[in-house]
Image (cartoon, rainbow, N blue to C red):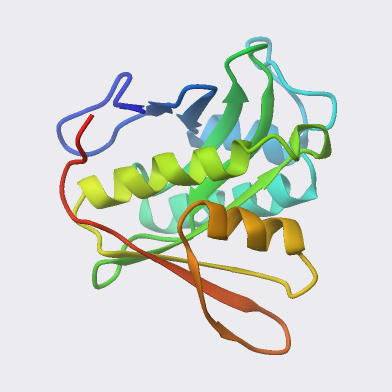
Length: 180
């Protein structure tokens, strides 16, 4: 994983790359295009991107940005496959860290599911959170979303609780920079 393509020393990095993915920290203008489902001239989207999950998550990102300003690096990232340059989903933080903890969510367009992209993107953002001194990342999923539960476990999360509507997971982080 490479952090900070275009990154800044103040923590407002823009991109993260993994072996197969480019995670791009979106801005409000790109977020508005995603919510409107209208690609701009430079946008390369898979045919089924954005899907409902992207629209909802980016709507939350836009509201947070309007209320509190810049969200990066704890904002929303468009997931793009390096192999074909197509945007296939998104991953992001559901707010700013609090007490060393932050919540994360993700989703992939149906055509991109089943290839390990979500776990790869989760690994990258877990590393970024650890490098910024966080000790814990939490996530939840619905009881019937077996694929998401498997993805969380594959990325190092563990189940910490359940209720009627949600399964709650956490990943404990080793604080500080990871070895290359």
